[in-house]
Length: 251
Image 1 (cartoon, rainbow, N blue to C red):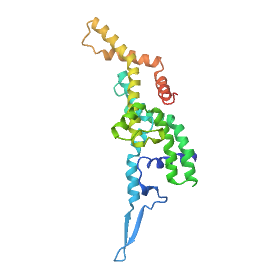
Image 2: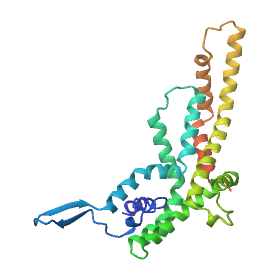
Image 3: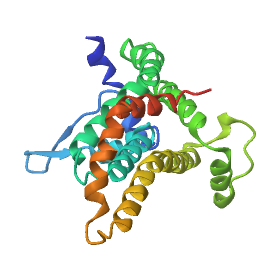
Image 4: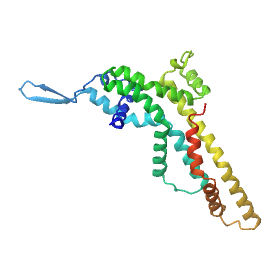
């Protein structure tokens, strides 16, 4: 039952970057009924419901950019290119693996949000505005730890925002793009390190084929089995998963 309640914290995240005042009201009516001049009834959808449905459309993008999903997905995509296996693993497998690894990495943040914000709100100990503020805290702390100061300073500079005195002064409008930029940089750095051993194999195979005069034979065909063998013998998947998980919590 607790796991079902945990899923309800997603609703609170809708308003973290989408401050619609009407959504904060408890017990939003889906429809309103009014009586017209002829004595009939007219049904209309409330503005709050329209705002809520609009916010739901951007919720996946917010969750993906506020979690570890971006880095994981890019690294796995670069790994597939380094191996040269074309569409193996498929995009669906990479997305699923990235999603579940994201849930594993973000679980401490989710637990913190559930204990501090969701459960008190469900017990009616705090109002929804306070719950939203408490729910945004763990995500803010997580993103600040992964964000480079240079990226944050860049967005502060180009936005014309006044100099920030502490981490609590960083608004989400600046933190979110700075976090995503830092994640892209980190993901490409990890991808570069992953590419190196496979690139060496490609160079060795290409040199051997050139020395044998087999210029018409694609080096990718010959190097692919060696790259797969290296990846399997090194227990590559375990190393990649461990490295990705550890990269978010290294002090």
